[in-house]
Length: 364
Length: 165
Image (cartoon, rainbow over all chains, first blue to last red; front, side):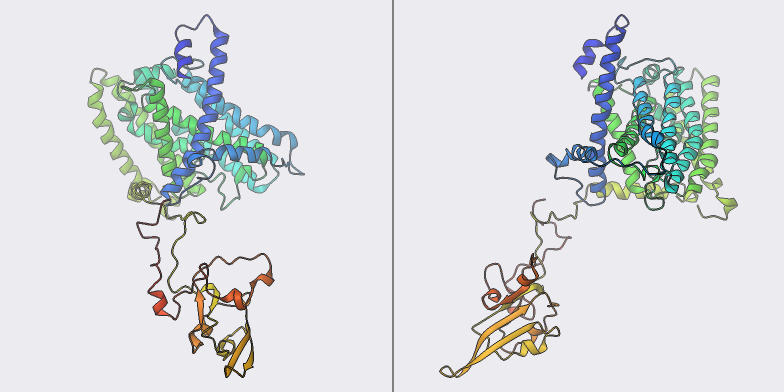
């Protein structure tokens, strides 16, 4: 992969279709292979954190377990509920998966190695990633099942709420980089933006976890309360596609966090594409780590966290970043690192005191 | 999610899980790995010593399930009872060990093994030769401390050395 990329990279504009074809194949292979690796990694890492062993029967260290799972899914019967909406039920997994794959069109694997260096890259990601929600809502609606619809409603509610703090915290990064292009954002990160935007990183990470419905915000498919949410009525490879969309989004979030906050493919010694993969794996490990640790939140806690905690902090963060950039453009960015970390700690502590549910009558 | 505590609870939880990452898993991979059972296990089989048994049927009388069946005949030459049939329906047995405790001649033991699954109910009925001690059918130390002293110590999940996993 790296060899091909290196060979094809320099000055491609003359050969649009070859570039397009090569990168579509690379993105497909990358997403499918990495998602399978992530499923294995998540199950093993989670098992070890819970003093278990995890899957270890299929292949060395159980590495082929996802392959066995896919084979099992392919042979399963495909059921559409009798009173369900047949066409929407069929379309929903496709609508969920396609935008997830399209996100990777603007993710730079190394300098210039991306399908399309859009000058509105991050805006494109924000726009296209919300389409997955439509697929999830279609799945919930067409199943003609109250649990499915409830799960889909929760998904829509959480995405609508969390989109705002996520986008506001992205704007902080965009202000620092001076560009919406993913490539330019990486090029601007002489200091990783996680140091310059610690609060923005925190807000983005929490919001992103909620948007891709990972634990502790996985109450769209909370198995202990609403069976399995929107994929209750799904079986076989259609369920597999919804599952792929979910893990693909986790991969996309890892890639976006890497690009926006962890200086993307930049790093010493190792080749850039390896740095990118290492950072993506690291972010995914943190996601798994949080999943093993934190119990699921209630729906009112979910909404309150978005509107009362993340949103005001995101606005304040945006304001502070804008002031820093406008008022002190000459000051070295290294001076800003401790200042911004101090601001983050003060703001989080302050807002933790303010955070209440039901005017303080409901325990948080 | 105690936000009054400024997310310290979450940080503590994260520390606990990351410590578990470095810990040994407690899982035992059963068919390949076996733990030593307690030395005084009441395993699911009875061991019978034909030489010591006098056919007094004390065990059959104490059995709350009535699952021990003994048929004896009088042997004039040896001037004692001869045990014709010693039969235990282990399907009825509740492994209370009362027969072992009751035996006045120490001719009955609980078994040390525990893998006794069968395909047919009839195979659960053990009689005569099927009840004797052998390499697979070792007596356990239940009510017999002298046997318990010879058996290996029980492995606990806390033990560091539990074999390769």
